[in-house]
Length: 230
Image (cartoon, rainbow, N blue to C red; front, side, top):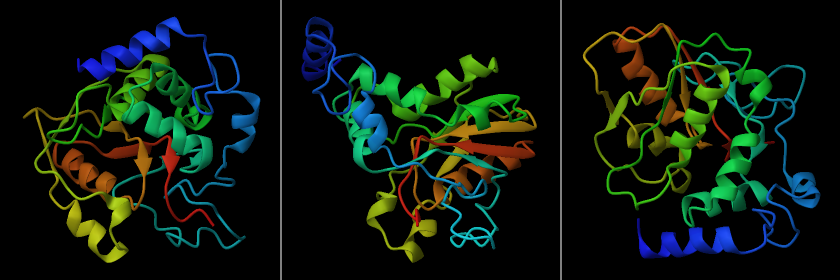
């Protein structure tokens, strides 16, 4: 573990517990003020995770969804306290932020899914040491819904950050991004977990690999959505 991470964990252990987002209000959990500042995706499009803006359905995916993904579970926009929590967990490896994010998953929808296996979008090659948010979320989900967790993917290259790219380059950026680590067929119903949903192209690439190895119904769960929220 890096020296900075060790020091951060020591400080988190020794200092009085504070809200993992604002770091002002006392308590290890998200404070009432930060909870109120979360931006919910209501009502969500279960096919792509965007807000459904009118009675005609989703104006983002036009009810087509993410290719290969049956439904998407996500509750909040990547803004305000949600953005802070994700940065605190990914950059500063704060355990309190990780725990708060696990609580903010769309548990009601996740628990309604027919799932045989939970997997995760893997860490990018060469990433800094520390907890991997998507893996932590996936393992928490697997434990709570009492299904096995398996790390299915190997990532073949380091793509550019999806949120930094224009829409027309995002699919090419993640094409053939993964391969499956096992030669055996996978279960039919698989839940793929990632931290952020932007274009859906990473999930589409993952779904393509899973289907080539026997999966039939593939679901996705993310803790936040970065774009197409209005």
